[in-house]
Length: 342
Ligand SMILES: *Cc1c(COP(=O)(O)O)cnc(C)c1O
Image (cartoon, rainbow, N blue to C red; front, side, top):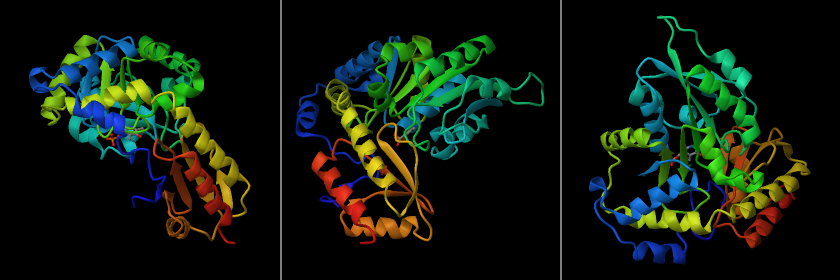
């Protein structure tokens, strides 16, 4: 497992030596009393990065999203999102059990929805309908193959939400993979959303942690919700130190991961056993195999050749590039995928 080239997810990275050194030398305290200087520094850094008043360090991106849904809504409200959304697909249906809200799914394009679709999905104010309250966008979209929104696409959604009194949350688990492509700034992103969730433990390479970012009242309430969800941590400044290190050193290099995914996508495109490669926009590469080849068979072949990847359907496979995948490893993966069936 240790020597395999692991393309299962960008969550599989281990902290680098300098990141570990930053963790070792962190000054810590009890964060439930807000006495951990490193967590305070990380939260201030993240808030400033997005031009918002405050931020909250949490154990996972699921928790930051679930807290955001909880703070933005009341029971019997509904959340609008794309059908591929992480909050719908991969958070154990938590919107329902944690917040008692309904979900209103839109069929978007590669996980992206637009203002016209959202406008058509907003429910009128009748007692027998859930109250539409929150829109969640995902950038980049995981199940959408790493697709991303530009701010030009988000602006009309922002305007619509303001007009109709809806909150707008960004699930930005992999936001920085998009920003290195678009060249847009975090401040610009901050200005478009009421709340933003980012993951430190995906492409940024920290072992643990996500941040929820927003205005002061929102984060004050979020802190209470984090506590009741069991997310109040004590000397977690050791983890926050990894997060600070990641924000300082691991953002720009995401272009390398994106380029690696594009390179493998271009190779797969021309191979006989491939049915289709979804557009490769960032560090996620999703492709369909030509029948009768199925993902189980293909993943077994890859594993025999020291390459690990994940099934994304009976005939669909996902590769995810990250910090622990070097160019030499990509050379090796290219060889392996070219050799299939030879
Ligand atoms: C990974 C991910 C999350 C958060 O997942 P955790 O494993 O709970 O940290 C949220 N949204 C998206 C789009 C993700 O890919």
